[in-house]
Image (tube, rainbow, N blue to C red; front, side, top):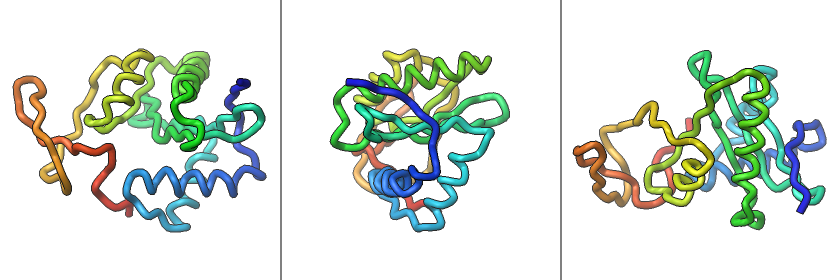
Length: 168
């Protein structure tokens, strides 16, 4: 299987739009055309690192890394099409993007993950994402939760790997 990250070209925008719509639907967000257009605008910014994943000449996903706080390179979006999942492509993309960022002198990369997504947590940890910088806490989580103890404190965590809010 031949895999590579490549720059986004004009001819890719329709497929990128479809993948972004699917990405947001997995987050329980119905993204509008304006939302998708804004995502594409951000992904094409020269300040960002955005790539499509090609597998055997076909687009299988994308990654978008944006600057956060002026020094942190935050993986905003990582998406693999459903038919390509479970084949090690997420590992490939994360390994490659880290090489690109480190080669450009960027020493730190971060990714956010829902704490109930153990599969993703294990993947990220195995690839060197093993530092906790910040925990994001909220006053309410809509939907089914379970209580987990972290650092001796009890927190409610979404039981499913989905966000329970709408994108604005």
